[in-house]
Length: 244
Image (cartoon, rainbow, N blue to C red):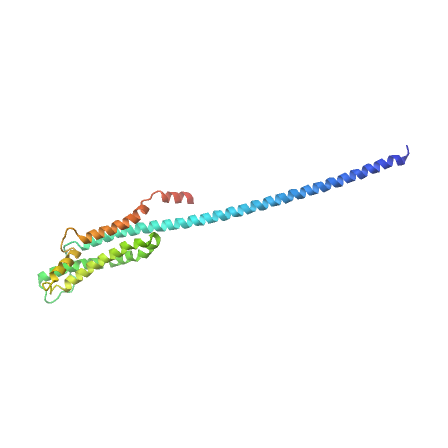
């Protein structure tokens, strides 16, 4: 067997081996490329999902924080307004108490024509107005919360504020009219008007007492709005647990 006969098969084998290696390298390269492309696509998808999830969490937290702040503001205002209406009723009841104590009413400027009986009567008329004027800042602050209360609880919730202010104004007006018309108290239909004014300031006891009834109704209306919020002991623990 000569050398050429041995060389040719070796060359052919080498060529085939080279071709196989090249094909294998090409296939491997393609496979690696496909794997890299799949991995890149997967990572992009995961990144998008993480981004979307973070955006959703931020939106949910923002919504939750906004809800919590509104709830907290509503609860705080409901407590304050309810307590203030209870206090307002007590102040008006005290102002209308049919008696003058100590110095009550004595800041009123006495007129030259008054005798002792006139002075005692006029001071008693003046006392409810004096007592309410002493607490004018409290009533002003309470009435000033009307629009904030309406904004959080609805337009209809402003009615108790208006009614309370009207009751207070009627008492002040009645006291003023009793003093202004005192000298003419026996003329015309003045006695009937004065009886009505005396009922309003609590000087003349009546049954039923219309001012007391209206005042109680105002407090009941506010209570029906505020108490379900103030007494809901389930909401605050939920918010605190969720926030933690």
